[in-house]
Length: 417
Image (cartoon, rainbow, N blue to C red; front, side, top):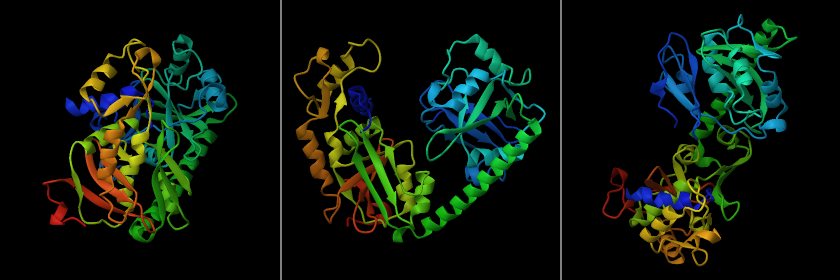
């Protein structure tokens, strides 16, 4: 479990007792445009709104609007990224917008689909300058025509390395304009930008076609999937592909070989507690499916844990409020007596780590061992607060079982394996 905070684990327990904004927040318009939801929260997102469903068909799977969370940008702060530092130092002076070369709306869905974008503003965490710099805010405003809305620059990030490749665009309200240096030709910059979007879109088409072909024969593809601990505080879902399953890793991992996707510690804690709140049985085996795997690998609301996950450790430092206020931890420790324990005699001043208690850990592990009939290592999967499946790693790729509580009926009336 990835959260080093006891608060994340323990507050998850209290939640059992007691993406950014929705796509509908995008206003309708005659042309496709991008919207940005950057409220300083933990889930910034970029939205796409199209004039017709057909215009957004390849990107939004049948709707006129869709949201995509903003991905990470590595080595993007300060001097670690020359592109980022140069942009913030020169925005509005050495770097300006080409207002006569507006990006045609027809390219906006392709831009959204084919390129990984990071929105930049004066308050962005990637800003290496002062966050309350009135001069910088004025220079950002100068990137846009008067009255067109706040300027949001767009950085293009390499999907494999997560490093900034370029900062070629600025959004002014619903319009997008190329950015250019003092000696750059705006017409040439516009042509380069459009050509780059076309090339990225065609490459994305090839990746999508290979992925669709792989999905159609997923039972015959080899995958290595497991939940692994990178430290006593952090777990990851690990996926490795071979030559035939490579298109899946290209889509999910943005590389052709493998990836390690961090497991959210709070969601996993909720999943463990939900699993421990009932007795479960496995329904008939489901064949390995790429779609099922992606349901839990690609979702922001999913969790995945093994019996080894129960040995993860959590720091006891409070995350919010007064630094020495441990009242939340104290209260939940008392309420869930026997589930959590400190790794030594509890004292707020010692900032000890927390563990799932040995008795509770063994009771969960004992129930998990019943789920895979051939002795395979079970991975319990779910979304939100729902325990849904167990993945049993075995053979070429593994298999799934839907999970139900005692007394419930299996999907389609199918019984236990």
